[in-house]
Length: 176
Image (tube, rainbow, N blue to C red):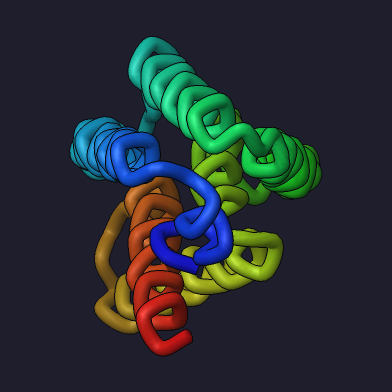
């Protein structure tokens, strides 16, 4: 895999289509970086994830991955990103129901699931594990530091989990 695209697809497509697909894939990930950065900054300051930005992040991801699926002539990527989004949303919703996080985090998990799903099934779990581990470490630092306001804004850790998973996926695809 190279950037989430199977190597075998490169052999069967012409160079222009492959280049276009790679540009759209890169632009889609840059869209995530931009929107996740905005959301992380707001979450750190205000402990909320504004719906308009979350929706913008989600729609940008869906649009990008749809264009990639159409360009590649393979709708499997669209299925995995939507499934990843659904799985992440349901899992985070269960945590919300037991009082473990806010509804903004649940909504942002749909975006997170899109991008983790684009990397592959295993990355849905890897990215979530990285997010929770980093947030837990931060919470322990707050506890031991006896700082007031021990609420942990989870959005930045969710974004970090996606970005670290993306870097891992790049390393794995480069080694393959």
